Image (tube, rainbow, N blue to C red; front, side, top):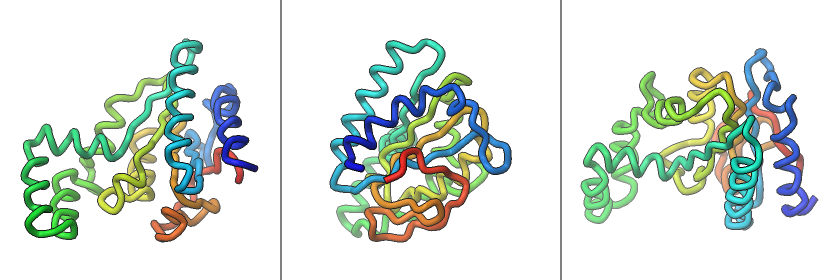
Length: 192
């Protein structure tokens, strides 16, 4: 299928009542991944915007909430007063030197992970969560880590991660190049 054919299948799929009630392997609500060729990033972003506008204005029983991981990271760093410091540190010491301090600030993989808390605190029962910005947030925020941590925090609404790379139902390969890690709990939203 072409990327256009695959994108056209997203809206009918997420609007199915059984999608919103779908149960995963452990009887939890379904997590989904829409993987795509990274070269189609702008096309996918545009289509996500179209879907959000259409669904949120025409369907009162469901709302799409998009969470861009990169934007959330920047917002949290800014709120904590660290964004300027991180940018200065990156300019003087290099990008590699800011990754771990940012991860610590965001409390990634900890019980009080600020990214997961941000998403959890902004979701209501009729939402469908769209996770975007995966490529922009890498290597600081890793997709499998977010999915694993969200799984224990959000179990009442479907979650769809838009992943610029390849997901074979087990392995996440970001940009079709970097092995992010294995993740077994998600379904493919639309087959390639």
